[in-house]
Length: 382
Length: 117
Image (cartoon, rainbow over all chains, first blue to last red; front, side, top):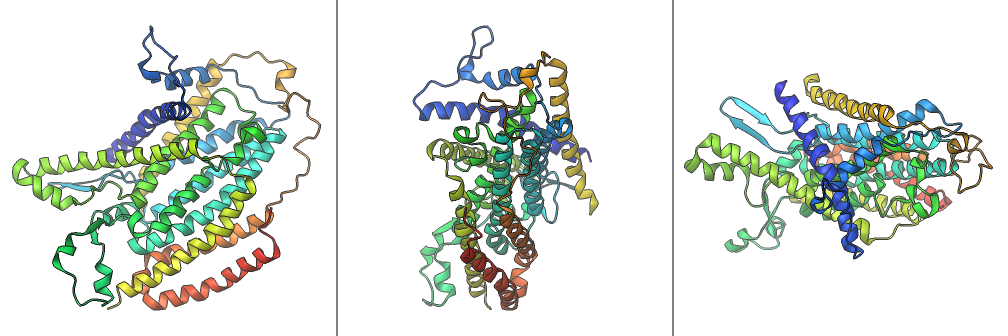
């Protein structure tokens, strides 16, 4: 019980306390970099600005000290409920994302995931779908035409991409043979021979021995490259990230469903949106980028290699630290990718967003499942 | 079995606490200077002509129906995918038969123009 509480507090602290402020800062600095500006650098304490790192703190204080305006004719209770509805699922998802492997210290086994549910990935998708309600309720409760249009777009986009996101990842579950996130991450702590299939299909009797060294980490991105591209596209659209942010398109809908929100009520939407960036990063890392694993160095190899020098307990502890660091480093790389995409690509037109979902990604992901099925059965036929 | 959900419940409780405390502190700290014009819903400087509370044609109800169909299909895919290796060619054939009506349905909707905007 104590361990669960500690793990929960750790992940909450890392994501809410470190990633979230850092990401609002990175967003500003990276947009400034890409638009050849200086970027946020004004917030200071006694003249010390620390590269603009104080801006996230200034944001929170300002949002808290602003007036709370509820428009005329709005449904007061739902207007208050909507921001919480979009923030709470985004935080709850953190419970099932593994940020490290399972480690054994004597009799004590430490598994670095808050809740190891059998159907963890379904829980992630379910929570993602729940945040749709935040957008719908916010738009409907605001008594504003722009908000209503924004929430209509948001709900239609989010339910469409919820379907394709689920289907795009099915090929991956077939390869891993599991729906449990820690198991999926552990599967990727391995390597495979790039040309192994040539031998398996019997095209040549045996490959030269040196080809055994041509290996790739058994990461989702190498095992399911098509699935990776489809899934990344879908998860961006599902979370209304640019270039799929038509529901809040400033130039056409002013601000979309959170137009009538001010102060911290708006702040909660803003937090939820920025929280989704590291959550997407962590999920994509777990599914496709090997989770906590270090490429070419499996957990047994690491502990086995270090243990003779430092002792098993210390080696396991070191392995734990390196794994957690690797996981968050990969997450940061994904965050960087999302930020770069956000400031590079122009917004899609709304009908293009929906066409892409139903006419391109859905057929492609069904095809991906079929091809994966045939190849898997062929490769592993006795 | 249910013990696994301790962490989920804990995380949910903390999430609710974060949301509630932020909204609560905001209510305490925020100033209150209410007047009538401020509470008008925003409409590009105009006063509201059409109320959003009237009937609104939801153009994408067809998409919503498609969503129900394909989301259910996706849920059937998950356990099948997890057990794929054990099921073998029989599993593939069974899923193929299961998918035919759905693929045909998708093509039909497509041809009928239900996916146009």
